Length: 188
Image (tube, rainbow, N blue to C red; front, side, top):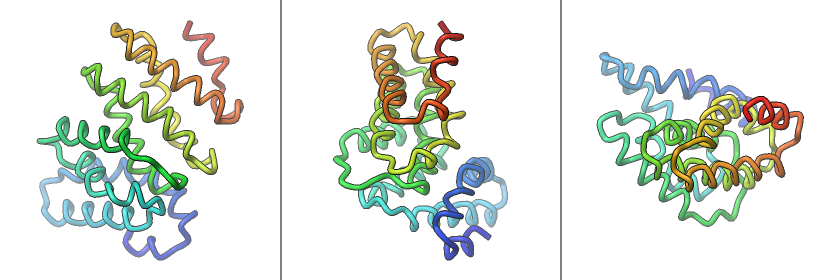
């Protein structure tokens, strides 16, 4: 079904991806080979509609980070390094965010201080590359709670990087989108 949807308007498909990608992540490790293959094909179709050439180039690695359970930590670390090392010349679109945000969310959940720090750093960097803030809005409920938890991480570098990411979010995104002041004041 998703394969046929890729021929539809990019905006419509982009609006569906926040619901589609988590569902695909849930079925990618299904016992049935055909289900796995269909999920993998759907991820590839999502990658095909990414506009950003920088993210399109690493789309296979992003997909592996979402789908390869056995090598997850190693692949995710490599993807985070590639994202941090990439100089973006274009804006990040909704299909790109659908693959990047779940990887960042997983990184923020990890025990590793390095993964959390890199995830927080990418949140801050990525939000500055978004042309339309509405593209990231569906992912804020996934990212903000994890980012908020890193504000009290025992590692000072993780806390500092997370605080910087929140500062960038507050600068770039509309206040009504974040509700940041009320969320932070209840947290502190």
